[in-house]
Length: 171
Image (cartoon, rainbow, N blue to C red):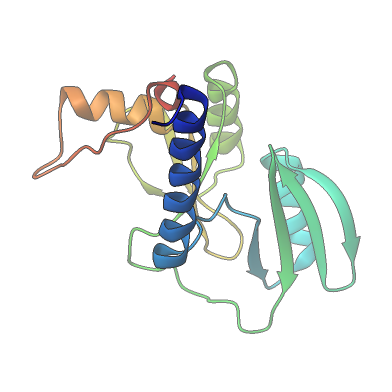
């Protein structure tokens, strides 16, 4: 007969083996976005836009690029002669988080600078949908995935399925 300490150790080893087998079978989960690189046609114009208009923090700049921080996101501007000259017709975009307190300031600034908008907001949380100097679609958004899921649980999208999440992740 196995004592309770041996039984507990057996369970812990079994759980560890299960985790290892799961990772072997499905691979390790990525842990986040490392950085985002945007191709730009004019480094100075884009650097000015991202630092002065959006408030990104400059980290480094060189002849063909720049490293910036947008909150905790590492953003790279990379000079590229193949930058797209048209706005993409699809919904792909980059959403930056802004605080509710700062949202009106951004809204005024965008109006003053007469920046191009690409969409009107129809979803949870305040959002501004703008175009950067190289036609990248951007969104300035108040909220996060938790507020979006809370809103969509009240009013789900068509055929929406919700998956189980640990309670601490929903805070």
